[in-house]
Length: 117
Image 1 (tube, rainbow, N blue to C red):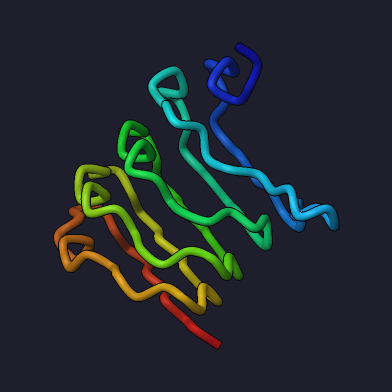
Image 2 (tube, helix red, strand yellow):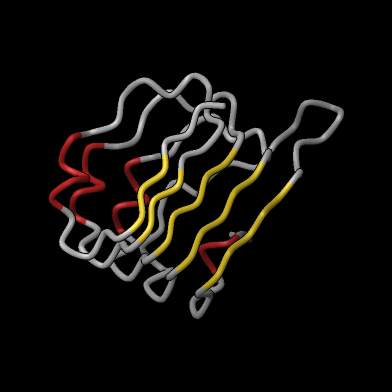
């Protein structure tokens, strides 16, 4: 199988403006298990439709930056398991309605932004 899950040492992923005019778009992999070193994810206007619960497999994740993803409606409740998460940015996600309160118990979370503008 080809795909991002094969890049075992990947630490930083940034995708921006990747939504194609044909309507095809990038999506999170179903299984993050092989990406145990991932520390930073930035997605800006990719057209992604959800943040899957499989993201909670990324135990080393420190920054999750998801901006202007207009289809995302919720953050998985398991995000409270990402104890190394330092920053969570969910700016411009206009349909976002479900953000678990457990994010306020993340021991290392220093920055949180839920700007709708």
